[in-house]
Length: 219
Image (cartoon, rainbow, N blue to C red; front, side, top):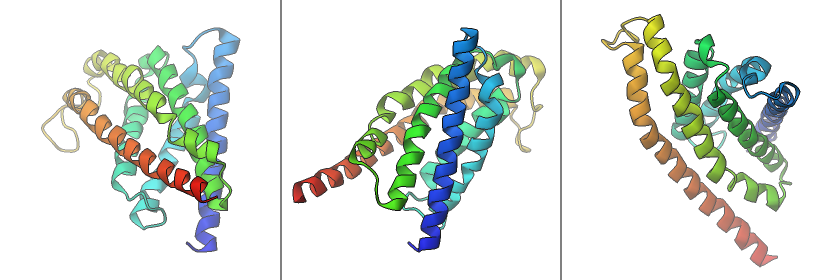
């Protein structure tokens, strides 16, 4: 990888690290100050929407070979999160104070303040082994929490509002399906798509941690 590409990736991951750390600070500050979990979106929602939208760059990074991840799995995660954020949470004010938003934002923020610093330090070639272990271990708990009581539960809670508001009409992207029915289909597919991503992360974990173990043995 060229020095310019490496510098770009370091800056991108550093900025995302800062953004997600700020988001986590805002979510937790709101919780501490108000003694309530209902202010997560008001405190950090727009920032998280921006950070998540900007993460489409990671799909491009994989597609053009800038990183070895490929484009498929980054696209799956990006599209699921972005749809959840922009179409549902941002689009339906009634769901913005639900506990599921707090759970999702907390799980996402904790995941990203591990993932992005790990990537940034890896660009410098000085990532501590404990951070590599944390990067490929924390998801075991945080990923299911963000998906089940977070994203999926909130989408389910949003269904009555989607139906009542007739959100996005009767035709989605010209297809003969309403957005209400689309979200129902998404909810049915979500566990299978999530499992595919989860298994992929475990494969990554085995690969990365085994390489780390081999390097330790050689030292």
